[in-house]
Length: 208
Length: 208
DNA sequence: CGGTCCAGCTTACTGGAAGTAGGTTACTTC
DNA sequence: GAAGTAACCTACTTCCAGTAAGCTGGACCG
Image 1 (cartoon, rainbow over the protein chains, first blue to last red):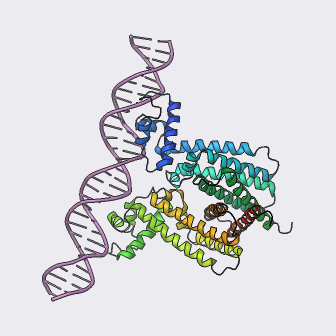
Image 2: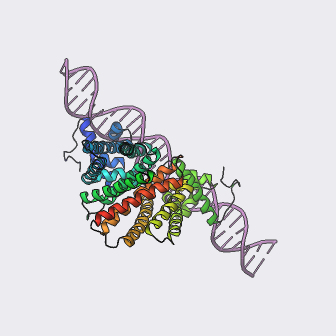
Image 3: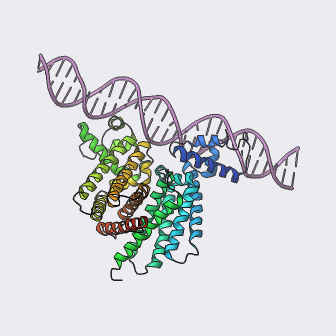
């Protein structure tokens, strides 16, 4: 019944925490955050509820730990992908590619992070998710700024929101279907974003 | 203490329901769904909790009624805006404009519908919100299809998701800030979407 | 006018899950 | 083998969604 199959063995804290996060990620993403009780997670870990409170403070704290881990991994993957790109187009293409590769290989964590009811866990979880979005948006704004230094700030911010929203929703669509592969989906996304941005820029500078 | 200021008067069902939905929309969007207790809504209506259960079945049911009302109003506004457009570009422009006008004039309902924790209310609420997105996506696909009859279906679906995500996130950004007006924001959105779509189409038909 | 019917309303409860107080057990270290 | 502490447990409290069962005031009928 326990995940490790050892019938109730003591475990150092770090290892137990990792186990709890793995179990939580699985159950939360399967059944949803609200429909999962802390007792259930504890039981699947072969442990009692207060242990989870000891290590994560609250049910929301456990969720936030899962989200934060996934978020950090994603940020690392995308920033690593972008370094070394020589043109904005290439940077965008690589970033989008890394983004999709992550969503593709971490479907459970991904749908957990973005599934609506995760944000409902509480203010800290909602802030964590929003922080992920704004992190992406800030990177995008910086990228655009390098490309069009004299565009109005609000326009770039708006464009970044468009990119964030498009990435988020297309990735959710992607992980929920089977027909389209990650590369093709990333290509659709990249193409529409790229031309959308060029359109915005041309509109802002009709004379050039 | 009651919304109507009449100290506890009986009220016909339809009127009481409307009052409950108005109060619920206000408190939910202020404090969040989870942090609001049914007792509190009932009290602000000058009524006791079982009345809400009598009329809406559950806390989630009350929320769904609020969402559905807003969703229907939005759908009506956007479809009305699109009829009579003679080109796809004009249709998209009008639709986006109506979308933003709605978000602008119904900020409370809008952030309630899209704020993360609303989807956490339960499966019915989540389905209601997702249905709104898919309704918009289906309309978009039909619009694109009329424009590029031979494009692969999955590409149009992906493009629709991009549009939906971009609209959603930009509208949330919009209602949370003051610097940019509704028309300007709608223009940013329209421009980037339009060029993004054209880019996708050109990529799919390089020879034409 | 007096009776009866029912929509609108209430009080007072149950059940279940989050979170906690305080104590117990087994492993490590000297 | 005793001390100290990390890992763990049982047994609570609290809070809130949801429910059972009955009360009330006004509309309509005779």
